[in-house]
Image 1 (cartoon, rainbow, N blue to C red):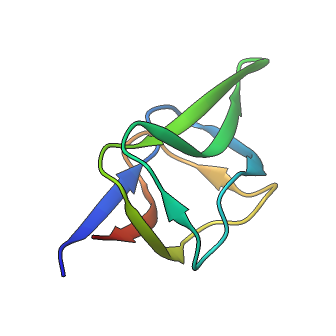
Image 2 (cartoon, one colour):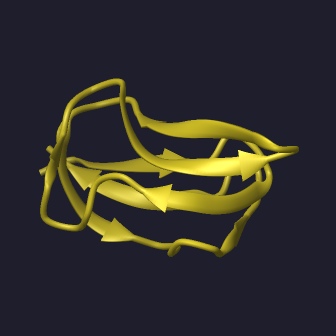
Image 3 (cartoon, rainbow, N blue to C red):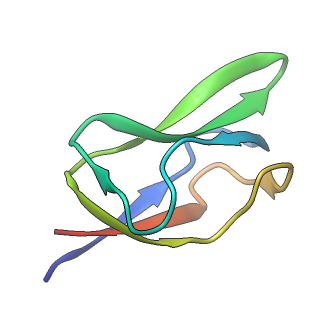
Length: 73
């Protein structure tokens, strides 16, 4: 199985987790939403698979480029 890292593209705070661990996600589907500079920015999985790990929770700070989730396909 391939493990795909899902990375935040902005620095901000996790506003909402959209896909829990164990759920399937499609390619180009948002996994979570990050609030940055009063905008809600989706964090997109580039490939489909099953979310096996979330490395942040709602309300936590994230940095640009930080791995926030792992998807296996």
